[in-house]
Amino acid sequence: MTDGVLHTLFRTEQGGHEQVVLCQDRASGLKAVIAIHSTALGPALGGTRFHAYASDEEAVLDALNLSRGMSYKNALAGLDLGGGKAVIIGDPDVLKSEELLLAYGRFVESLGGRYVTACDVGTYVADMDVVARETRWATGRSPENGGAGDSSVLTAFGVFQGMRASAQHLWGDPTLRGRKVAVAGVGKVGHYLVEHLLEDGAEVVITDVREESLRRVLDKHPQVTVAADTNALIRTEGLDIYAPCALGGALNDDSVPALTAKVVCGAANNQLAHPGVEKDLADRGILYAPDYVVNAGGVIQVADELHGFDFDRCKAKATKIFDTTLEIFARAKADGIPPAAAADRIAEQRMADARAAKAAKGSSAAL
Image (cartoon, rainbow, N blue to C red; front, side, top):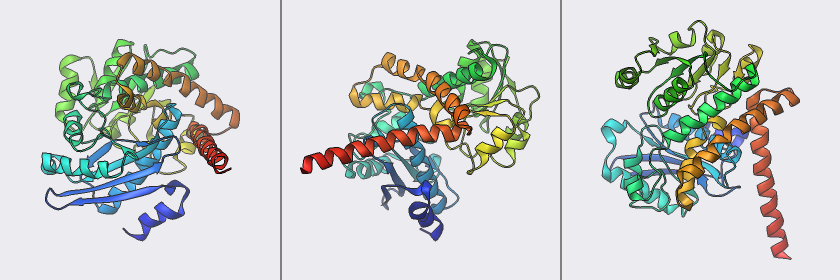
């Protein structure tokens, strides 16, 4: 690791991680990073991303950022779980194999339950079924193997609840009827989100780098409009809501000044490219629904596997994302800060309270 990664890990507020594990299995080609940010509220839960990173350092930094985001996501979702994330380095279309996934499962098992994994970009339910053959700490498995199945279903539902809350806050009515919504990325989560939007009466514009993803939506919903790319999408005239649903960093110094939408609410993790972007959005009068708040439906679903999965129970919990989002907007207004900062404060307080409770319990036990 270079000084840049070590600096992030040890010397910045964003790098307050408890544990980072580098994993390698030469026989299968596995190179992975498991980052545990916090176990204050419970075992660290977060998905496994399989991606061809430009460098190993980029992979480690992504794991650090994603795992920190999971701590905040799980805290605001009301789960008694901490935050962690893993990345497997490489092109999944080339490198993924049963041997590699089994090797990865052994590394997860070696952590003794401190980290619980699930699906993310580049990994799927079938992959978790394989990982689970080597560890009990794999969620997002198929129903046939005791799991909840595709967590994208409730992820999209939660984002939709966040959009409804944004509409309520900004326009006084929790409906997307008549609103123009742009969705960037209609893969695992985005295509389910499009379904909710159309059912609610929204006008939808989409884009995706994969032609097959676009075709899946258009074959079913020919009324949906397609933008050439994300740059064209965010500049679409008359947009009400922009939903980034692909990789992170969608909100940056180039995209924020070009946005025509009044609201940003999407499924992608780590949408803010760097600190300060949330203020840029606020300065432009754009309402930002924090990503880790509204996209928590999936983690609510996979977390439920640890207790015996019940879809209706999970959907009821995911519906509360509407209320949580409104609470964050109200806190932001009261404190005079952007919604992202308000969400951080609420999550940090819950984690701090948990740490204080553990410390007090430990002190009492020592007496």
